[in-house]
Image (tube, rainbow over all chains, first blue to last red; front, side, top):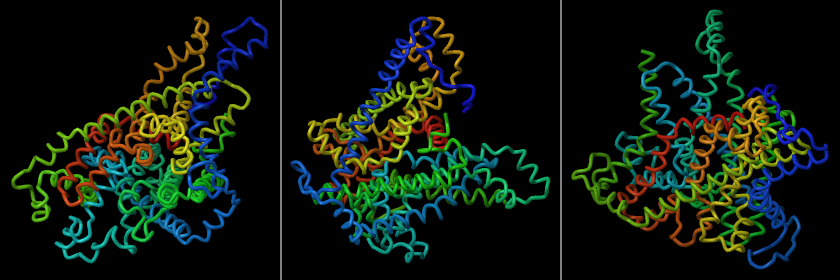
Length: 324
Length: 270
């Protein structure tokens, strides 16, 4: 984006050359307000107000019907931090983030580097690897719960036929394997998306730089390590950001496949929130959990923006003041 | 040799990606008895009844219709409202602009899960449960941040000279927006529309809560419900899953460029 060349122009002011300054201003403001109003009403009433109400409700003990009267202050939050399920959610969320950033993203990057070369059929591979991204998590979840039925599903049969039955067996059905299995499904669905981001980033690296490194005697690994990787920095930082936020907010996939089970082993914050809010009718406590989801996302976003993405001018989600 | 090993890697990954899909497609042509006896071979004989049953069921088409209606309506509202707002954010200088804009950009961080409880209460009190508007309006609202950010970026690239020319020719602000800016922004509008359609099509949580009656069920709800109903009939469920995937994959094959362009632009220019 060339910001300098396209400085915003005051349309209405330019269109009314004669009238007094006051009237001109009024007309400008009328235009601004009428154009912004639909967005403000929609966003305010269906996003901001509900989130505000969630904050409010998080301080009540409320079953969801009638007006909330049982004010409990921060009790819901203290309860949350003594609740082993919620603490487990935090731990599982942390593990999912660790897997995603440590395994899925490097894998996606490797695939992107591979497909950035002149290879026969690379367009088809790109198309193919990205395709799962357009399927809903719900449908993906149903498909994989069929494929990974313990003992009876095709995955176990396949592993058995090559003598690796020990690798399969339980999948979603066992507390010790369910989270890793869910991570596998997440990787199946999302690595193509991150690969596409990296490919877009790789295309932005001028070939001259790599050639220059080559002439200076850098091998393939050195070129990757000291040229490609640093130049890909902004893309990687965005990809990590999206991946972490996705892990914090994970719901559909887990709900469709396991409902958080067996015995909470795959439960995420959003699943716990849903359980309390819509199954057990502890709306106040559920609201506190949703406030925690928001709080954790926002704190992560702010810290990440402040300390990690600071250098990437266009990457700002919250720190907009720098870009006029 | 190196080429060969690279192709080998791509093949293995490709099989992992496509394998589940192909398995689903082929298994849909088996009977469930056949499937448990012969899990990986080709069907013999090819059973078409699973697919014909899906394609002949009113429920499946009702879900397609419902998903389509909701996706289209969501997109029209989200993109229309966002275009107006993005126009102001891109081309007017006024006090408080960045504050309001930041408000929308923070909205990128809000998942449905955070607002869903009060949203549900709100929709209930406005009698919007079991009503498509109960899904359309919140979805449009949650689509605003990304749509506004992408459109504002695009609107800013349109030269100011064009605007001056239009004004001199007697265009009002809205006239310029409607007759010059929107036609010029067609690629960007296409991109954000594709994003909005895909997001709406895949939404699960909100329809799950809003639609109690099967009348308005969307495809993700329908698939999950079907799995519950025919739990033992694996081949039949897989046929349903495959049929439910077709619209999304078909749309992807048509709109692939717009979608990928939009995601990379949305992500890196966010």
